[in-house]
Image (cartoon, rainbow, N blue to C red; front, side, top):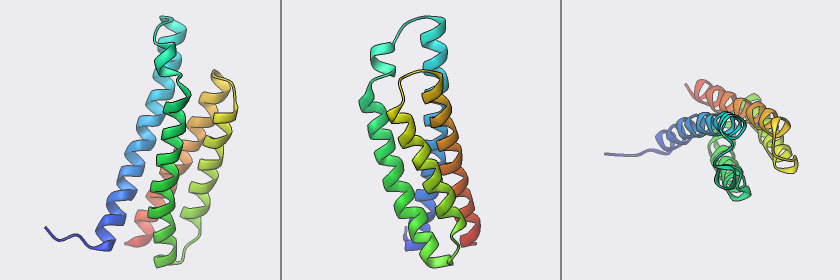
Length: 123
């Protein structure tokens, strides 16, 4: 199987969309499980999960969307995704709870939209 730079970037964009969805699912599930059942707090709210998630999002979005912006010369995917990463970074600075979840979900939606725009711009 031959991988081209274009197919690698497409795969990274798709991975970014999937990871954004998983992050949103983690946020909602954490709130539901913790508020409804009161269990899993030490694992689900561990800061390292959020820090690693943001680091992965920054790398994947930076490479895939940055690379795409250079190739197709459209700033919108890059701007939308970077705004999303900013929301996600703001969520790390917030205490655990609804505010953090809202900021994170806004951020992951924006990053995901940036990846989708990037995929559309490339074709």
